[in-house]
Structure formats: structure tokens, C-alpha cells
Length: 504
Image (cartoon, rainbow, N blue to C red; front, side, top):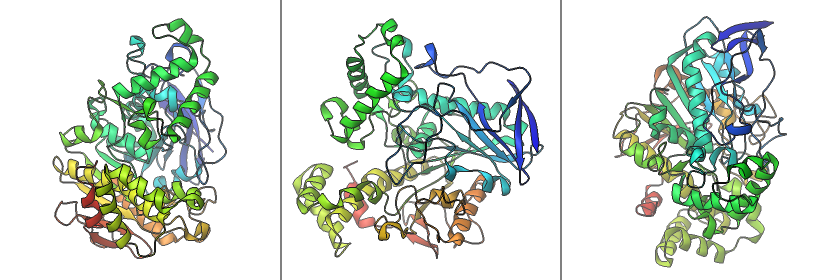
């Protein structure tokens, strides 16, 4: 069956599958070729007739994500600013869930199997998943080299804002209520959500937010981003201000240099990458700019997202999946060097190491290192974001995903991105369940998915299948721990998290 809706630019033809109205590859902005490559997203021209929206659109140019993440990449191209919609009723007025994919700001797309929005639609939510510019196309800060590209360091973030404006203008045609929009994302998507909470340009485009495994400490200062952009231009043999030479650089060549800079990140070449070397992500949203005047966490703490309801959390062992490949070479000496660098001195590092080791009897140097990195990159920023938002909104909830995957002989634990297939309730799709395996607990997926649905619909994640889940507070820090038996924890790992005061 087919379904047709009218948006501002023209008519769209989608499909009807199992009673759901599905639209794919819907353009929300103009292609990013020619003069648009480094500019803010431009309006999409109208079309005549009925545009087909039954097949996926192009995605942003990217390299495959490393195993075990990623899947075969769809076709990439300039017309990548598109989105997908799942709706149970195009005549309704339903709450809207807008998903921003992760992938370290260089990979991922809205059409990965895990992000299929059918479960949300079956539960009365209009689900939207978006693509945005990645890597150098999305986050190369050229402002100090080419004034005409003043917004280039946040082009990908501006794409997300353009998609949210499209939702405001058009989602009613799909049965969505533009006054009830929740934005959500994981990893770089969660960091994007936090950046949108911080940016005044996103104000009024959503009322609720779910940053997962990504908070407000990420981003690159304009000073560092300018140095990175200068290195990109040097490798492209383009002089600052030579717009004609920059325009002649092909997307393919730009992408080659992007990969070279990403390789530097893994070598931690701090002379070029500055603070970006720590995250190994040389292309991220740029702060000290008009779009992000400060780091997102500082803006949220100052009240940029006052009144927005927030649900935020992490998995229990985020970083194991990134470090497991290093297991054969990881040593006690490497661990001591890592904690010394992380905490700023041998004294602080070794004191922290003693605490982490005491809490994990028999843990290997790799496991302890992963625990430290999980806190640095994910759990501490998440807690700081919840605390910052609590100053301006009482409606903040926190969670932790504790169910550990049995794959890889259990070595990954409750790792980064594992919760996604549970949130989207897509355990039945092997392509979506690549981290959870064949026998993952459906009741955990039902419980977690219903919490997200309840939050989107009612502004509160509580539902009958969960223990009582109070709002966040800084006294006992109630945290819902999702597992085969979900429980409410308080002040989880407080002794370890206290070590990070004054460190990040």
C-alpha cells in the first residue's frame, strides 16, 4: 500500500507496512555540493508531482566504523540531508521522537537496522531519524581561514537544527504534534543532543531530551579547531583565503585528508589536535563560536535549556568495547602511565588506581583501564550534565544499562551502544542485535523501550513494569539500573566518581 502526504516543498509518497506509514529519504535541506559544502544548510527547493519516499536516501560520506560496530554502508552523496519517518496515523496529533545517530562524528547514519522506528510508531509515537554532515564536511572550522565559511565548524550541528525546524513545519502532515518533540541520540548523537540543549539556535524546537552515552563535555575550542583546519588546508595545498583553490578540492580528496587527521588522533599528535587528541575525534562541534559560545556543559549549567525535561544515562562498562583489541599488549606499566596522564600526576593517578583496583578484585589492567576511561568519557560527564540541568528544571531522570552481552565470552560487559537495540525494541532483527546476540532478554527490551515511550508521551519514564523511579537529586542520586531484574540504585560508585572532582 501507498500513503501520500503534503509537506511545504510538495507531496511525498510513502509506504504502509503492517499498518504503519513509513517515509524514507525525505529531504529537509538542499544538497551540500558546490558552494553549499561548508555553508549552513540551505532551504530545499520545491518539487512538482509526487516525490517517492519509499527507499532510503543518501548518507554523509564516511569510513566504516570499526568492528563490532557498523554494517555495510549505503550509498553516500551530496544529497544526504534527509530523514525518515514512521507514523501510526497521519491524521493524528501524536508526540514526536527525533533520533540523532552516533558514530564519533565521522560515521553512522539514520538507516542502520537498530534505528528502525516501527516499535515507537506501534506505541503511538511518530519516530523521525535524521542524517547530518559528518567529518570534515560537518565540523571543519574554517572561520579564521575563510570568513565566508564562518559556521563551517558547526555545519553538522546546524543540519540537525534544520531537521528540527523541518519537523516543526511539517510533522503535523505525518500525524505528529510539533509542540511535543523529544530529541534523543547516543554517543556522538548524545553529545549532539547536549549541544542542542546548549545552543540558543535550537531553542523552541523541542521540549524534552534524551542524551545517551554522550554529554556536554565534548567539543573543540575554536582555537584548536582553527589549528586542525590549518593542517587540513596544508595537506590539501590550499592557502587560507584562496576560495577558488578550496572549491577545486574534490570531496574524495577532502575525505582522504580527513582520514589522515583521524589517524593522527589515534597517535595522539597533540601538537596539531590539542584537546581533541584525548577524545581521538578531530572533528566535533566547535565552541567559542556564535552557535556554541562556550562548552555545552557550561551553557547548560548557565540555564540554556531551562525547563527542558531530560532523561540521561550510560551503560555500565562503556569503554571495554573500544579497548578489548588491545588486551594482548596491555600491561601494568601502560595502566600506570594512563592513570598518571588522566589524573594529572603520578600521586593522584596511583591513588585513583588503588581505589579502582580495590573495587575490582582480580581485574586485569585492561579492565581497570576501561573502567577509568568509562568514567572519564561517559559516566562523569553524564552526572555533571544531570546536575547542571537540575539547577534549571526539576524534571531530570538518570539510568544505567547493566545487562552484559554474552558475546565475545562476556568480555565486552554492558558496553557502549549495547542498549540501543533495547531502546528501539529491535531484538528480533539480527542486523540490529549484533552486540546483544540471539538470546537477549526481551523483557529488558520491553521495559526499557516502554520507559522511553512513557517519557516521550508523558514527560516521565516511569511505568508499571519498573520499580519506583524518582527524579534526579544530588543527595542520593537515584539511578534506574536496567537489567533482567531492574533495580533503583543510589549514589552508584560514589567513591570512584569523587576522584574526578577538579579533574574534568
